[in-house]
Image 1 (cartoon, rainbow, N blue to C red):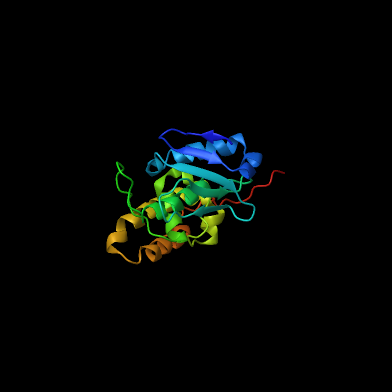
Image 2 (image 1 turned 120 degrees about the vertical axis):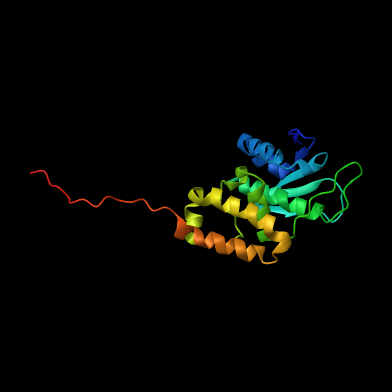
Length: 196
């Protein structure tokens, strides 16, 4: 069994099925992603493999190690890793914090909420569009162009959440407006000149 501890006291182990498929790239991505989750400090995360989905997290009902996620190594993105780790936090925020640890910041349960909190957490997780957050096809297909603005909108939606119950609808409406406000490259209209 491969075990690694990517700083901040998080112990990561892999299932035998994952060990067979594990690449150096996937290990680097997991290490880098875990640095963005200080809430998982002093906890154990076990990483398995899934064939059918991008990733799966088992939301803990009791604070019993290890916490468990499954990832598909082929086509792995930071967004997928961050999304599954955020699911772990969703479950942990419903549990009392362990002795000596500060209380976890609550994250509402749900796939769309998970996408919002993942994007807001770090630019690192903006490498691929989220799966559950609704957005126009233009924004999804040109994600690199819109990712930074979507992330800022996610941060703002979380900030507004305590006073706005419809924060997800607000966010998805703002995202839908992005293509209308995107700068359009202007082409100078000139007469075509033919060289004779």
